[in-house]
Length: 187
Image (cartoon, rainbow, N blue to C red):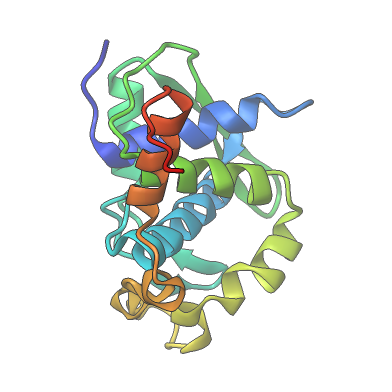
């Protein structure tokens, strides 16, 4: 199995999840970046750190990082994905197709849950709705920096964790222990 970065693992996770949706084969690059952005916002909020290594800036269509092309190249070079590039009269479309080749994901319980949540809730959402009702309403985007300026992602660190007073990793670890029969009852 290929040894790839955690950011590439997250990209592969979303590409696989997208392909499991009826009628979907390739995930558009812009959607892929929005999925990573939402995962990183939630990871910062509840885990105190992002899942990916992307550094987002405000682009015409929301958060973006040009380094996504390097991550996609990493997956392609490892034989884990291919990219479809199409052009029409107006636009260039870049879509990622997962190879179906398995990899060992190196996510913590909290990271895995956040990736699952983002895929479940946002992957099939129409792009316009995703942008207007979700992405543009995140705190880093609401600060409304000029186009091309970095988003202040640090503002999200531990906000949710402090608000609810619960450590997501510890809760998930405890749930896993209960599922495995490792729990004590007191009467």
